[in-house]
Length: 316
Image (tube, rainbow, N blue to C red; front, side, top):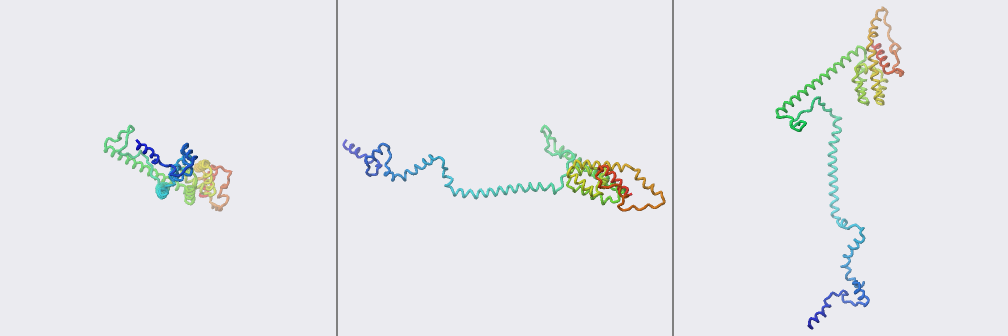
């Protein structure tokens, strides 16, 4: 019993001495007993252990400072930068590779001729379907027969198209030969005038109306024989295409009206009955020009009619 008492009495020596064997005052000891907080002079030994534990609490209390983890990985950041730059270079190269065929496709239609349009139904394929989704051909032989019919249609349409083009060329040649009987300088006027209108920066609709005229040869000659009138027409087509198309129609009416008068063309041979020699026509005289080509008081129809008549007289 005495031994146990001795051990119990000695047990306080085994308890950790928070004061580390140092003498404390009564106030320090009383403060420690009440609050459990060591006096300030006894905290120096525990600062190294308590500081790491206090830092997270202070960080949590502030709540606004960013976590230092991203700043603690400089090596990882240095590794990401070359990888990112390499990836960007790969993407730029890929974009350039994709843009190059697109640019070629944009230029290709301008430099290469447009494919011939299909004038019949689309070319059949072996896997064609009916509207209900079932196969169109019961056997491969049916497909081959359909393909042969399609090819025959294409050959027929091509032959018809070439024949129509040849007929148009022949008709134009006949009109050109006929115009040579009325005008002396057809080749020197018609072709430059036609080329000037074709190369002019005017709407395609105006060019088509001009080129598809039934009196195309005479139209080119009447308009092209006066350079100023040709310039006015091109300028009008650029500023007001609708008015230019209307002017073409007025030109046509004047030309057709003048060409439909055979009486005046037959009057020239009757003048040869006299025995007196025909006086030479003065170059640039009033007799060679029945009207002033710069007279803007005339309508296009009247201008074309008088111009055609004047040219016929000059070439008679």
